[in-house]
Amino acid sequence: MLIISYDISDDKVRTRFSKFLSKHGYRLQYSVFRIKNSDRHLEIIIQQIKDHFMKKFKESDSIMIYPVDESKMLQFGYSNHEDEDMIIVV
Figure 1 (cartoon, one colour):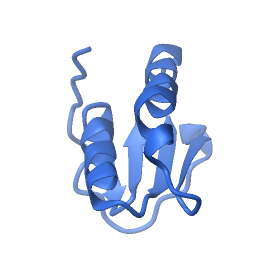
Figure 2 (cartoon, rainbow, N blue to C red):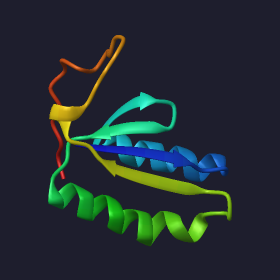
Figure 3 (spheres, rainbow, N blue to C red):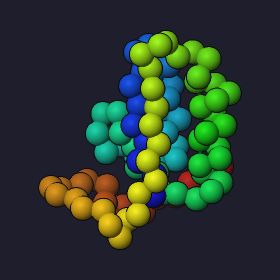
């Protein structure tokens, strides 16, 4: 699993990035997404960031990608998406 967090100041770029991420996973918090991990997903995401988003970044913008071992993850509270199946079409 991947956790992707972003801080993008431009509204249009931020909206485009969140729509892009929603094709690969689902939103945990406003600027945090959970993505089912595979090497191919990670390659696609990194390439899209490099090709389409990095050139539009300002100095304060950032994207952080965290690989997470689900067996070691702690979760508290309630998640609306936890039991939903996810289908990804590429």
